[in-house]
Length: 484
Image (cartoon, rainbow, N blue to C red; front, side, top):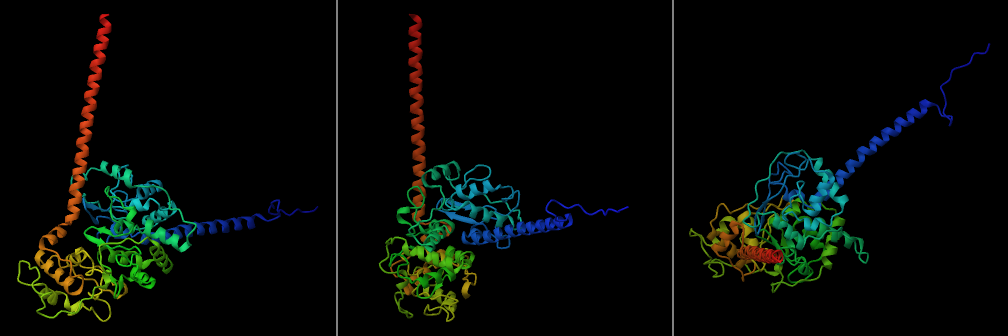
């Protein structure tokens, strides 16, 4: 009697089931590996985009608590504090869905439906691709959650009313994704996206129009970042960067320092530290390619900011003595010798290794306005040791308004543009968070809103009066008809 062997069943293909199972297991493992790899690459992409957008710069008030918000953003209308964008569920973005996060970044709408103040540059981010926004979200959600409530904004009426933001959006928020110009090179289009959208350079470097939106007719012609002046970066050879070489522009973006031209200070130094130094060389060159093509916008300067290089003055020179004094007896040259000469040199030439900048042929003291010199004295410079640059201490807590004015006037008269000066009253106003021009602008805006409110109230009263008259006429007509 023949004995039949019991063999493992074979599928129709003739491949044994154990082989199929092993292959299936291998396929699952590969799929799991790919699923792990894809989020990792998405997070890596998001990290780069987050750097390019300088999110950490405005969403970090304490370096030990990155992205936890609370950073004070000074505006002409008051102080706005940034939000927590860590994955914390209660104070951060932990409960934001993908769509809600995209809506916040591109349209300035919070998860609860309220409008975000445009201190967040969503008027630039509106053109960011959804893919880039979600990559940034992936990176932020991968960070440690930090519980940190946002401080209350300090805004006067009517700017403390969020409904006013809706009016601002109607005038200034234009939605729609970035569309590459097919007549331009890939580098130019990449630069346009980085400058106009992701890097939101116009938020500081473009002046504001009557509705406080970016004035597109004067794109990148110079604006403000709080009290700091953001310079003209168009191709104009006097007011802008038309007199810079490509290599100098690239170097400045990467390091914040170009001897003989400029040294970044204030928000720009922090942007270099937090953002620009981390960009690829290709992206830096793309930014330069785009800036080269921005139409030139003239300014008030009679000569390039970096061209000022006054000869070293000597003690007793009337140009350096007799500056505005503070409550003490120190004059500008006394203050400079005691506070500045150790790092910047007695003749303002800076240190030989470049870690401390020269004050001659420097855009800051050579500018046509004094704000950046004053703010540098008050707040110092956070250089982050980028390319060996050293930070500068803040003297705002040491010097009174008159002393700051005396030192600022000494620096500009001796090393920069001698045609500008400040008073103790100017410094007092800057220290408080505004300039005369900004104060006038806020008062004008308040008057405009108040006038509009009065006009609207008058129209409503007139409309109500006409309605009452209409109703009275209707009642009389019906009463007359009833009598008939």
